[in-house]
Length: 306
Image (spheres, rainbow, N blue to C red):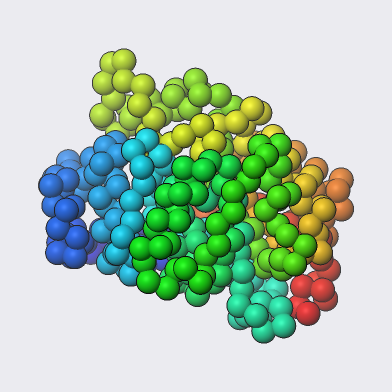
């Protein structure tokens, strides 16, 4: 079977989707399966309904998530890329700490902007039995994520949701004085405006060959806080970096996805200014898409291993 190039070696999705297996496990996917240009089974990836059905089938087949969905219009994330981030964080942790967190406690992650899908905590817990705190500024996203947690076995004790009440902050109001966190992760809003988000979506749809004249739908859905913010990705992650200093002693590694390579240099300069002990940029090449995340810590190597 053909393989997907450059996904993490532990990624379950290095081979092309087995639609026969997925449809057997999740029959609702069948209605969306079509033949691609090569005559192979696929779906229309510009259809949010088809992507949602595919995600639901993958989560059920490979991660024992039997009840998963997102409300109409909310971001429906591609699972292979999301779980790649999880695996690379596991590599980062294995190089700097033991298989469990400090003092033998389970590893705890903090997902900033978990969205309506709660996808990173679901994947991280199923793959590595990690515990999670998951935050979002949108009450509807918190409600959707709570529904997923409540309706799938084993998630209630593993994932705690926290609503961020203030859009000016990222970690403040979410990390409490008693929290000890091994890593944070984030898929920050990339766009600086809704207009830019729509332009990018239209370009993606043209590349998929499904763009219709006047069609302004956002590719794979997404609400304002999921897709854009004032200043875009650079300003959002910059705010995250500045605020992380306050929680330097409570978090082992802070991380965030970075979509634009042009943002790496100014963010690294900012991290140097605020006194990060170490900064890493980890590349993740997924097919034709090149992605990366930036990781930083204020703890010395000796402190990280304690």
